[in-house]
Length: 206
Image 1 (cartoon, rainbow, N blue to C red):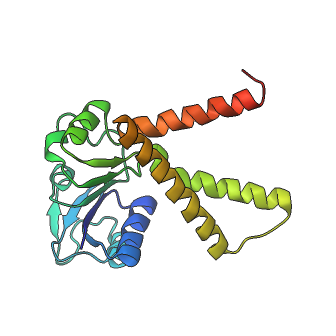
Image 2 (cartoon, rainbow, N blue to C red; image 1 turned 120 degrees about the vertical axis):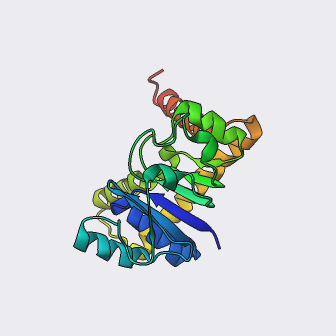
Image 3 (tube, rainbow, N blue to C red; image 1 turned 90 degrees about the vertical axis):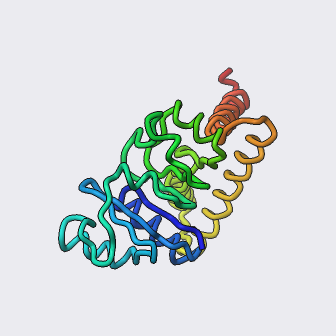
């Protein structure tokens, strides 16, 4: 069972933890908010923690969990780390001690450039924010398509189409990174810029 922590437990962090547990059986061992973090090796129930936070104003003090600082949180031994709050939380100062198998960036710019080099050299698989946060943009595009076509897809149809797009995007970036010995972020930006250039050429703009 994969151990997961969410640095940030607002709308994004909560739903990431909830879905990871519900859909993939991950054990959510730690979450945090602006006041601090909590840890339980036995696992946390994201819904119950969310209810506690709404009633008390923070996750701190949650029963049967240990209070931690955000610094201690990021250095926990976990399989999946989700930074879902602030920029630059993984920096050159803590990069050597941040060692999940997967770092999934749900915040914007949570990893500095210098820290990323350290993480990659330590074998951490980074799913960059530009890729991870693409789902919202894709669904906005789906809304535009439906509006302009005067059609309406149900939730299941939207989820099916979104899953297909996100899987295709991930595998395109991963394959490019592997083929070119590049990081996932570099691969994502290279592919994105290349597609913009191709679209501009097809339109005769350049």
